[in-house]
Length: 176
Length: 200
Image 1 (cartoon, rainbow over the protein chains, first blue to last red):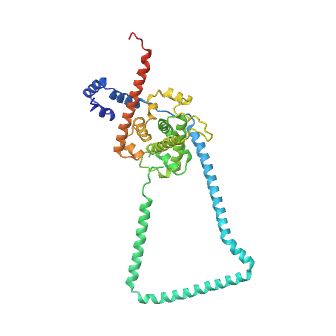
Image 2 (cartoon, chains in turn orange, red; image 1 turned 180 degrees about the horizontal axis):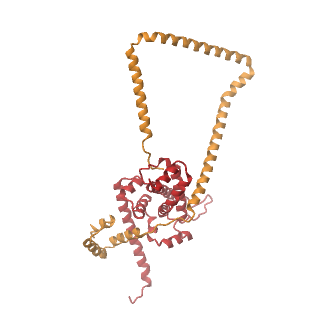
Image 3 (cartoon, rainbow over the protein chains, first blue to last red; image 1 turned 120 degrees about the horizontal axis):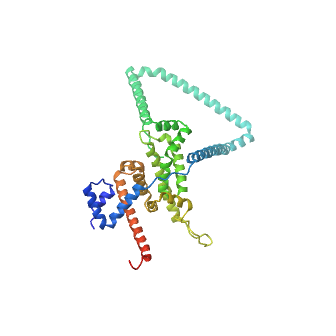
């Protein structure tokens, strides 16, 4: 049986004029498929809205409170596990050195002092080299190059600020 | 700015009281959607509560240019779809024999339950029984269309589908429901026949 255009009318919930209604009624008398479509459409449109049992908002508040407690507990446990793991890891790395230090403290103190002296002298040498470089460099670089350098830095800073601003004002989606 | 928008803004700023107003306002539409999707009052209550909890936790992501009701129903629909898919998977993956080889009955999701029966009695809704045979996303589309008068665009927006996909899902679901309706009519007709008087 040809269901067109009746099936389309029923599926799209079309508003029918009186002539179309008459045509549809005639078709429904002979077509079980379209009758079922029409009946289900009517049932769907007349179905009522079911409300929850009273006290729903109160039950939600209780659930929210329980969720907050559980979350706080989870965070506390997380922090404890993190601290304990960090402590264990630190012990694992430091234990051999502590053991060696306790066995021969004089040797370790000598090594530490020599490392400190090496570090201090390196820093001093680097500072002197940098001072010399800064004294000599301005004579080699023309003034306009400094202007180009400062302008490029300002441009990059501006670009970065605009990007951050654009990113932070993008609307967020609805997905949860 | 209307009252609802004020509550949303206050809730976004951390006011529990404002969010409670929103829960009170939308508890029925959210519960109804969950009930139509899951078919059982207990599951619907749990799903509706979870919907509000998720909404509360993700309130900072709500775009105020859109309808709050649509956003909320979208969360509820997605939660119910996920839950139905998980339930289907659990039913298929459950073994009906334990380690000792003893068989046990799987819970019948359609078995009569006093609470469900009372709600069914209240609503006198024949279509509800048929909704459970639809694909979860098709079911969500049907509920949004016929219980909330959502346009195809709004459904597409809520279910993250294209408008043409929504249209084809709605048509498919309507045809499926009509088929089930016809089957039920035929069955009822066959059951009635043996009791009919031979004189007729």
